[in-house]
Length: 88
Image (cartoon, rainbow, N blue to C red; front, top):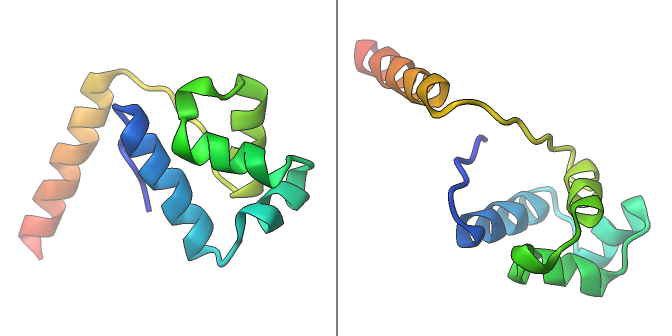
């Protein structure tokens, strides 16, 4: 599943959703990369207060990656995906 993140609340929702979909508790996730459960909680509830290092460790624990792309590339991808669905 891909998530378009434009706000901290969207990031919060995405991180929590992925963690839960993988059947991981905050404690389990923290153990994977050496982060305390309270740090996982802070990342999920207040992502703006997290360090970049902690954020990247959480992404690693959830087997996620951060991709930065220009909006026009994203918009083209969304448009192509919509057209493909319409063809079905």
